[in-house]
Amino acid sequence: MSAELDALYQEVILDHNRKPKNFREIPDAQRSAEGKNPLCGDQFRVFVNLEGDRIADVSFTGTGCAISRASASIMTATVKGKSLDEAGSMFEKFHDLVTGKFAGDPKPLGQMAVFSGVSKYPVRVKCASLSWHTLRSALEGRTDPVTTDERQPL
Ligand code: ZN
Image (cartoon, rainbow, N blue to C red; front, side):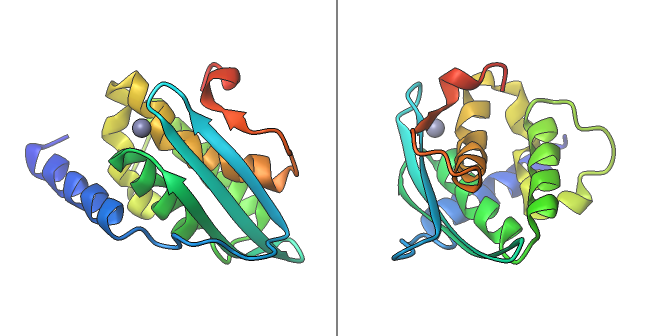
């Protein structure tokens, strides 16, 4: 990755960290789940409302480092309005990206592409993927908090 692209990605991450999208509670959400990344102290709750098999609304609250907050922000913006299948496929692509397995042009990933550098930092992979794991947990209707530690390998 070029230094310019790196700097651009960093700028996007910092911007989402400062002004996260969908950073709010959904009162009476149909689904919600809690996710924790004890290694870093990231802790989020993700809220989801479905209409049929479509994610009508999704949001998050909680605290975390810049990468985890930016990732949660971008995750909500990415899956909002998508079908469950589409969201699942996005999660797979994101997962491949942050674990360094994504091959090809990251452009279709949209803003998720800013996390392509994360694969170089294993600790940060957990920060970046926490909100996605938490989303999946909410969609699966799990009630126990998900922690990144129990889902090795990420
Ligand atoms: Zn973190």
